[in-house]
Structures are given as C-alpha cells and as structure tokens.
Length: 133
Image 1: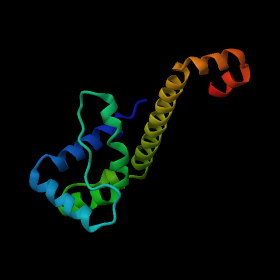
Image 2 (image 1 turned 90 degrees about the vertical axis):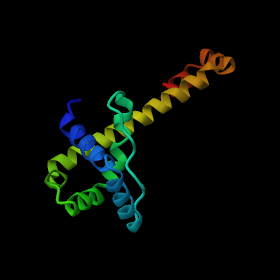
Image 3 (image 1 turned 135 degrees about the horizontal axis):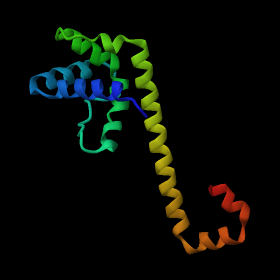
Image 4 (image 1 turned 30 degrees about the vertical axis):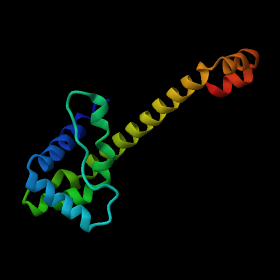
C-alpha cells in the first residue's frame, strides 16, 4: 500500500511532540485535562514496519488534541484538518488493525492445530477442517 503521504507526517508530528521533554510534558498535561483514551503517543522506530502501524490508532484517537497542541505552539496544523488526508489516516488505521486481528487469529489457529487430538479430528472430519479455514 502506498500510504507514505500519511505515515510520514504522522511520524514527523509524533517525533516533534516527543523530541523535547518540555513539549512532551505540556502535551501530557493537555491530555490529562481532556477525556482521552491515551495518555501519550507511543514510541516509534523507523527500523521495523510493525512498530510503525502501532502509532496509528493512538494518533487518530488523539487527532483533535494533537491539532490543538500544534496550534497552541503556532505550528501549521492544516494537514490535520484536510478531510482527504484524515480519511486516508482512518483507512490506514482500520487496515492496520484488521491486519493485526487476522495475524492474531492465524497464530491462534496454528496453536490449536498443533495438538495431535485436533489434528486427528480434522483428519477424520472434513467439515471441521473447513470451519478452521
């Protein structure tokens, strides 16, 4: 998927907020004053693509707070108000969460299939095998 136009600004904004201790403390105070699900933005590393996606849901959930914080510092937050960009962010977040769910389900399926008794039932019962696929 070509969503670098979403990920690059998300990472840049997140790194900007976390880059200085004073900015991070101010942002955390703002979040404490508001009823938010997250108290901070997750750390991100450029090295692993898996860690990149984990910042999407907190970023999307805190979008209005991030915009307010950026505007209070005099930074340009126009991108965060762009409907097309915000929809792309929401889609990418949904896509990422769906992929993580499917990956977890596949892992659970592999754990179940590991047991010899389950393998025996599946070998003898074609409909049970279809239910797991």
